[in-house]
Amino acid sequence: MRQYSSVFKDESKLDINYVPPHLPHRSFQLDLLNQFFRSLIESPGKMAQRALISGRIGTGKTVLSQHFGLQITRDAQEKGINLQYVHVNCRECKGSLFLILQRTVSKFHPHFPKRGYSAEEILQVLVQILDDQNIYLILTLDELDALIRNEGSEPLYNLTRIQEERPNAPRRLSLICVLREIEHLDSLDPSSRSTLQHNIIHLAEYSRSQLLDILSDRGNLAFRVDAVSKDVLDLIAGLASSEGGDARYGIELLWRAGKYADVSRLVEVSAECVRMAASSVYPTVRKEVVSSLGLHEKLFLLGVARRFKQTDAVQMSMGEAEESYAVVCEEYGKRKLGHTQVWKCARDLSALGVIESCLSGVGQRGKTTLISLSRVPAVDLERELVKILSVGDK
Amino acid sequence: MAIEDVLSSKGRVKILRILSEIGELNISEIARRAGLNYATTNRHLEVLEKEGLVRHKRFGRIRIFRFNEGNRRAELVGRLMELWEQTDKSEKSVR
Image (cartoon, rainbow over all chains, first blue to last red; front, side):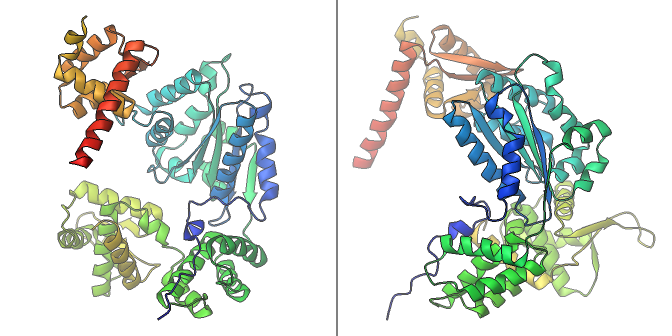
């Protein structure tokens, strides 16, 4: 029997965190960013810059800023300027300025203590590190809406005003804020809003032909020659286009279709593989969202999915969800969290849009959080979670 | 202090080994890793700092300790720790 070799050459090129060497259809925006931040290389310390990148999901906001970060730090290095780029996802930091700054400081001091000080103190620590090591920093706050939602105007106010206390010192901290909708800034106080609204780059949704270019580029990097036909790429581009020009969705579909081809031991990714992939990826609950959840969030979600699978109810109470979660914990041999921690899990999942939660109103005795799952079939969610849990955490 | 006085303490040697492995740490973390209490760790660090083997940097209320790279003795002790670990590992793999 002939040995089967995978359709993939290097599947890591389809990873969510991969930054490709070339960004199709974003060169104009890349040039804009370079223009905004040029002063950091031409006259470091004279000016700190701020820019805002907005756009819907999968329009290339994150990859654009990361690509720019790599490029500008390389240019600065050539000129002997110690410019560093740090990319932090506010959602992963649970919308906490403290955690965002803690993560930033740990890039320079990996073993910096994780507790024992306030957000204000760690901001001062960061400034001290930048001064001591003569670093100019571009800090990207990705999914900024999570920070605004959680802590309001205060964090941005503090980040943009650090220079006021040190008027003659070099300006070392520049910011790139990344968020889906610029309307999220409306909840900020006018002074914080005005400091951010200077350099705005809006990324429009990719068209079908643009998506095809992106998928071709990634396909060439990730798959063996002739493993993906243009027709298949076009099919995926069409699906991603119907999901609002979401390139990330398209790339994930391409990866999954490759996996289905491997499982079926095909030499080429077929249209049927794409269809199977499409039916297994719900655009609203993606692999990357579910797999980035904490262990207990996954276990809680699995409990919720299983309970909804068994009943026709539209909503369940927090108590019922906790019961199901306890059963799942027992199954996976994990100690269950206390009520408040579980409630926080539910709140975080709701903030991510994985579940919906609301407070019970009239007609229900007492007050509880009601949980519902409106976007994804419970069966599919359960299958996905069981798969992820069996690989990662069990 | 004479070398036998500085290195006669198990706690101090542990601290030196930890700093040589990790690079830099705050007192609480050194204490946790060395299995010592905070006050003892602080006292040992004071001795090591006085002898020029380690130094600290202050970030607000936090002090981060590391080997004192500019000091010849610190370099030698750091090298000793590294060599000890390396030979220890290679001897274990032979056994």
